Image 1: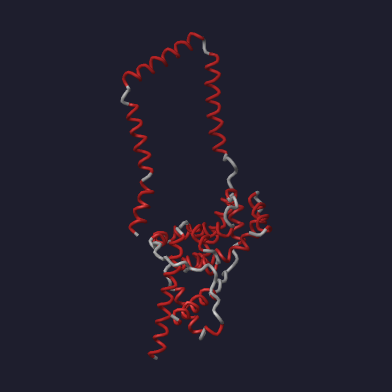
Image 2: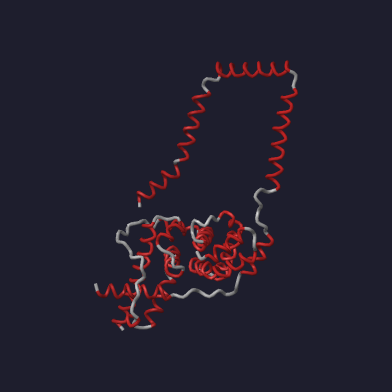
Length: 124
Length: 188
């Protein structure tokens, strides 16, 4: 037991006395050069800005078009919408359980990595 | 984290290059040392250190100060090491957590006269260098970078038990090496 304690002490001493490896050279200049080249992305990039602008313009155009459509046209659109909904209720009943089943399968698939981790952990 | 470092981090987050340069100066040696112990190649370790700080700069606005800045850097460099050594992550996960004994957090201070010779120390240092990359990563984080077991677990995203098991096994390997040295002295 004494020998084991002595070994522990020797090992601890060796681990604590291991010095940090000296750097062959400082990397600060290299890092700063790379940082100045690759500028940090701003809160949003120009691509994000352009895309959001296009989407906003489309929504705005739809809104103004809807405001300026003749009332007869609006009524026709509403009728077509109701007909489509009725058609959906009558002929697409299978779609709702199918959608739920698909969603269920999707969420079940999301648990696979966690279950795998648990299985691997238990095997250990 | 000192107030000075917190100020430097805040300045760097706002895009101050000088503040970030000071942080790089302060931490590069520890990051390099960690990379070197794992990849065992000076040039590769320098590359990884440089890449770590470039990534740190990019991700700095997301650093919320929930962990220490240095442990955050160690997490980045460790992830880069995982990319270089694909088996490293798996070998750490495979360590398991079968060490039940509680390893004391405090360091064991051996009296100077316990160290019989420099030869033993050198032998142990060589044995430490020869450890597998996963053990060396744990040992370096614990003894050179002076992280607690909890901090190592958080840095490597490993269970605390796995960290303790890894360090325990690394020490057992060193013990075997020590016994081997003592046996060679007896037979000589």
